[in-house]
Length: 171
View: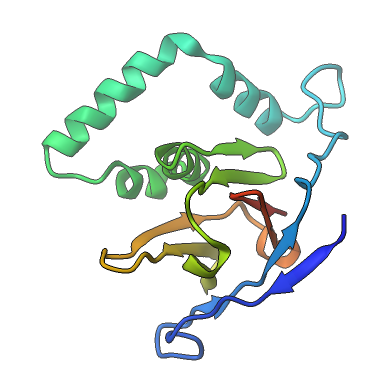
């Protein structure tokens, strides 16, 4: 996959808050998913099976939606409540809120209508937690900012690719 690297930074680079910019590579095709991850057979670990079960359970969708509605009504932000107990579900919740998809080795967020120059990624670590901050700026509007806690060890292998209006993060 050949492309050009575009460094999109912001005024917070090297600032007091500890965010480090992440380069986004522009490419013509999406990076492939890790085909070695499978959810059948004896070689599969419990975390992969649980993630597969959670992704395929249509009967829990209504329960999750009602739970989120109750949290929002009560003035709580669901992603903060979930982040403390189940960080992988908090990531899924944030990405799905942006109409994206979480993959076993990364995530994809459609940002159609946005230009690469409007998208800024920065990373931060707080103890053992690695976070990616996605900021989308558009003239005349407040920027859209979403913080996503990454799985353990993802920051060391993290790369970002921009393909036809879709942001791909892989680890």
